[in-house]
Length: 155
Image (cartoon, rainbow, N blue to C red; front, side):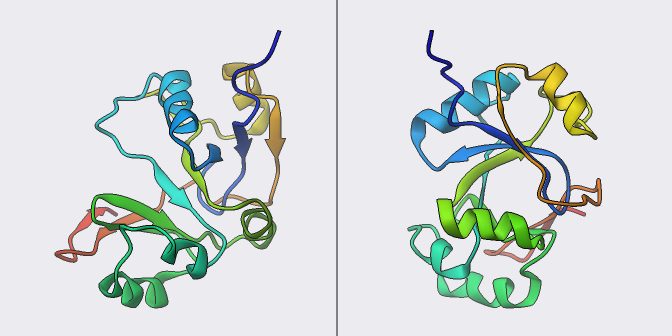
């Protein structure tokens, strides 16, 4: 039997443990499904470089200034209703450069606490068999800033 979750992965980030996968519609749907996540809550796109992010149609010149100020780091920049982030974690950036940007969400069932360890994540999401440890996490979610009005959506 084929595991429909074989393109998803669980990984450490510089912030919290995440569930991710390649930026494709079917992957986005699987992340929503496995987490029981409300589809009104957007998934962010994690990338390894600004060049990767510039390929997305939502990105614009106003967002460039925020990127220069906050990346790499624990700040998600929302532009045209899509969140982007470049993590401050070298092994994760190397993975993203090699494999391309990914949809990423915190590793938890919707409205439940975020898994703090890979072992905990394995118990909650046994269907996801791709597990990566890219290094230490702060255990604090990213700050979220909306470009259009500069509003901080999450501190």
